[in-house]
Length: 257
Ligand SMILES: [Zn+2]
Image 1: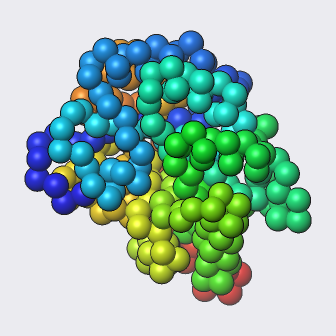
Image 2: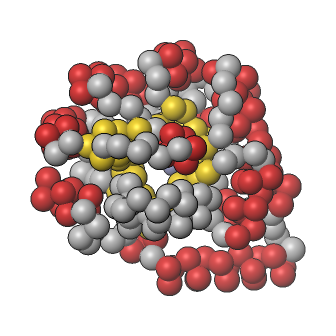
């Protein structure tokens, strides 16, 4: 990311396409956003490609999806294919529909099956990690944190037959300690939330993303891509992170984490 070329590369964050929660984007709105990217000359690359080597030409953008909803396979992928766009999906391994003995946490919707995860990989989609149980990583003790990171990576690598080198923090939450452990678990880069464009010298372990949600208008989408303000998620502001960190410190003192 230490590239001196002008212009930050926007990293977009989606969740469900076609689901019913406040983050879910309607397929029609998603198609409209993709058409806008195409018309304005953006060329989507995966998050891994951005981190490894930003392309020298074109107008790169990264399209990411968190959690691993089944509707990525069913609704988003056909649209991405139509535009010839690449994408990255961050999968919570314990939420996979047929996770079997590895099932963990509480999935928020209908999730990808392993077969669907294999199929999207075969289509050129980058699959990255998103924790095993979707826990708030900065609130976990060391041993549990390490398990969350390593189990998720190994399950994905074993099943998909390729190295998994990127991840996204569940809820966007991380800390210096979490980022150290992510590096130790051999991830090269990780996505946060932050609703900002990455700086030229951005820490690859906390790359900010722009949240696209149900209520995002095309005007809001355009403005976000240009770094002209965005809808702020109150739960994800810096002040709130400080409160959450102190909760963790108190629990650590009590010996509960
Ligand atoms: Zn998530």
